[in-house]
Each structure stands twice: as structure tokens, then as C-alpha cells.
Length: 351
Image (cartoon, rainbow, N blue to C red; front, side):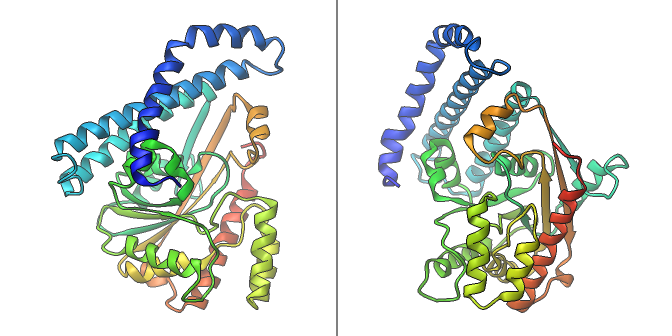
């Protein structure tokens, strides 16, 4: 990654210039896109993509400008990490995600259904909200499958259940100026995925230490967000995970990982240190389906407009039911991802 000063001085202004340029040229690129539509199979895919790119650039630029104003208001950064300004950044993120999902949901024809009961049509939404009721810190462990699923989860936490997420995410997302600036001003951790070895000198150990620091001091309205799979499901990642389990002498877990159909073997290290750092936290597991088939850019292009219903399912586990030993926690985590895998099997095809 470029150093922080370069991202602030170069990338942040660049996204504003790009947004203004795309908006100014909108009539031209719209005419060209419509003219090419007859040559490109699909339902106005090219105009939709160009419009969404323009909207996202404008959204990113708007957030960058708003955060510049907050930086100035904080005394040119002097008080930027005080509680009032952290709250202001969470509110800005909540508003920005509401706006983004309103526009993208309309263009892509996406719907999101949340449930915390076995029968979604029997008060499922209310049951989902109740699982996140404030008063107890939460560790939210979600599957990772499909483009934008982390955005959907954070949008749900901020705007539906009023939780303040502490987010673990891949370091490359710092290329996005709005995400980069915002998540360096609220509790979050950018990481370089590197496995889950036990070595004190390995990259995995350093990542786990950083996650432990992030999870420490969780408040009653906070939610530590982690994706135990470590990335979106792919054949290569699945095979690598199984091979590493075997190399570590965990044959039983490797066999269980081979039996998973929709999710990958979870990596227990991050969950273990988060649970140790937040001894009063319950755990909420999140499953979702609807974006599973969207793995490559070709898949996303083929599915536009998506016309998809995304279903999100949650389970809450009280602290008293969570094992203490790391090996027992590994088996417990596998049990939950096997349950998520089975739930995905029950969902209608094409969702």
C-alpha cells in the first residue's frame, strides 16, 4: 500500500476529480452506452454498470468531503478520536450506507430479508433485531460469500440493529479513500491474511494480536465483526485450507472441511483471541445466501441486473455455551459453520 500521506494527498483528491468528471461526462457516456447496448447481450448491462460506477464515485467523494469537514471541525485532527467525533463518523457511515443501498438496490433490484427464527414469515425480522439487543457486547462471526456481503452486514448492523461495528477487513480496501479514512477514525483493523499458525513469529500470530487489541474493551452497543473463513469461498482457497489443516496434523478437521459444500473451513485463531479479549461478549453467527454464485467479474456481469433476494439468518450463542480451550473452540466453530452450511442447503435455488 502507498503510505498514508500519499493516500490522503493523492488518492482522496483523485476520487473527487474522477467523480466530477464522470458526472460531467454522463450525457456522453450514457449515449455511447445506449448505442452499444444493441451490441452487448443483456438487459442494459453497460448503462447500469456505468451509472453504478458514477454513483459510487460520487458517494465516495461525498464521504471524503464530509470527513474533511469533520477533520477541520476537530481542530485539524486534534480531537478526531474523541467519543463525539467517533460517533459522528459512525452516523456518517450509517447515512452513507442507507443512501448507497437505496440506489444500488433499485438499480440492481436487490432485496434483503433478515430472520432470527426458524420461520421467517412468523416474526422473523423482529426476532433478528432482538438477537442484537443492546446491553451485551457481541462478536459477530459471518460467512464470506459473494461480492458486497461485508457492506450488507455493516449496513444491517448500523441501520437495522443500531450496533457500532469494529471491523476486521483486508488491507487492500485502503485503496478506497472513503473506506480508508473512515475506518482509520473508528475502531477497525486492516489485516494481511496469512493463515493461523501457532508460531509466535508468524504473520498469523501478529494478526491475531492486532485482533485481540481491537476486541478489547467492547461496549454494550459494540459488535466486533469477523469473517472466520478469511475470504470469499473459492475452489483454490478451499483446497489450500484443507491442505493446511492436514499439514498441521488436524486430519479430523480436514475431513470435516471436505464435507462442507457452501462454506470453507473457518480459521479459529481470530475468534479465539477475540473471545479472550472480550470475556463478556456473546457470539452472533450470520449466514446469508443470494450472492453465492457471483465469484468472478464474469459471473457478476452475467447476472446484471441481479434480481436477487438476499436472505440473512442469525443465531446468538450465550457466553456460557462457548468453550474455553482453543481446541474445543475449533471444534465448536466447525460445528457452527457446518450448521450454516446445512442452512444454506435449505434455501431455494437461485436465491
